[in-house]
Amino acid sequence: MPDAVVIGAGPNGLVAANLLADAGWSVEVLEEQPEPGGAVRHDRGVEPDFVSDLCSSFYPLAAASPVLAGLRLEQHGLRWSHAPQVLAHPLTDGRCAVLDRSVDATADSLDAFAPGDGAAWRRLHEVWENLRPALLDALFTPFPPVRPAARLAVRLRGAGGLRMARTLVLPVRRLGEEEFRGEGGGLLLAGNALHADLAPEAAGSGGFGWLMSMLAQTYGFPVPAGGAGELVRALVSRLESLGGTVSCGRHVDRVVVRDGRATGVRTADGESVAAGRAVLADVAVPALYGELLAPEDLPAQVLSDLRRFQWDFATFKVDWALDGPVPWACRQAAGAGTVHLADGLDELTRFAAQLAAGSIPDRPFCLFGQMTTSDPSRSPRGTESAWAYTHVPHDVTGDAGAESLTGAWDAGEQERMADRVERQVERFAPGFRGRIRARRVLAPPTLQSLDRNLYGGAINGGTAAMHQQLFFRPVPGTGRPETPVRGLYLASAGAHPGGGVHGAPGANAARAALRRPLAPGLAGAQRLLARRDRAGRSRPASGGG
Image 1 (cartoon, rainbow, N blue to C red):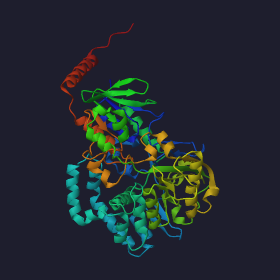
Image 2 (tube, rainbow, N blue to C red):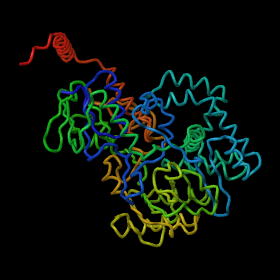
Image 3 (spheres, one colour):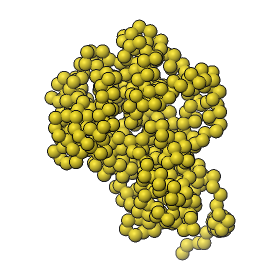
């Protein structure tokens, strides 16, 4: 019997398993897909000579994460690769805002929009450098982060106190208006805010856009050399070196609860796997509370709150194998790993308003990834492995475009939406479609089939809006990995601090499990087994014949 069973071999589940194994626990990870990784995987499914990341690609939070740094994954083969520039936001009039890992280069780009905006960027960066240690410490520790929060409060006082706190809760449109004279700085902030489901007018979108922009400034948007799955391969390698196991093709359909305590899991084929000390669930919140647990195992209030749980937007993604580099009209976009495609802040607001109304956007804001630019091993020299994703509503009420899309996402709708995404790219890169060698469409149902946690293509484990963060995540009054069932811990992006590949939800769950003392009977059994094990190791081996 393992000490812990981890449900799900996504990055959070694997981080949790590694930390438990570091503490001497025996750990078994069960994954329903045929390979580990969840939303962190790659393949050659678009074209055999091209490596394509299936879901996520760029990992600024992983680069900043003290959790992942502490695992020393470079000792298990992980290498990071960077594009020449981090991010570009071109406009159809020929201007382009560029975020570079050099603060001076970023500032120069913004000064081209309006003199003095470079200095404004440097001021925002100086605030970041002052807050960064305490802010990252608070972000990556369990809620409430008492000591990190105290250190952050001291730093905030030095950065202007309430005025800085006000800045962080501003809508990103207003933040850009207050800090910059030209459009470039606000574009960088707003595009980064829309990496989550935060509209330019949403409270807190300014703080999130600033955080993502400053992470990009300091750490870049790195990618694992060779493909996203190399990060997972390193996590699995490390776990196995510690004696942990990962079993794929095993779908867990029930957490077994006895006397209010999680004692193991049951798989879809009827197999029971007991857990001596804990069960950790790297699964979506509605799946854990609505499917894996019986209603009688949960308080009525949790079940009531679960009905109010809000997903982030659905995602529609297209992968391409390109015969040559993307023909950007703005040459500054050529060296960026990530390119944001919207013709100004008003177009971002228009896109967000269409989503809020349940309409499929006619000019979708696209995050475009140039993977060979970021990692030359991804495709043959002179070509580009690329992708773009955009957001669509979960419940479609209409189509703002001319194709009468309904959100059924059958084969015909997938192809028509992919054509719409390509037309958006063409606005900024005329001739792009002529360089397509092959493409693959990953509609919301496809993404969910690749990883059950990506419900309808939702990639952040639930909305990043303020009403579902901190002690509201995943439901009011929580904010921690402990669940109402003793010995069961939420280890997915549904827990604080939320989405992104950084390992914090898994680490928080593992640390909570390690802090919980064993029940007296279990503790006695563990001590007895340990004594027998030590006695067996000290006894001389019998001779063989």
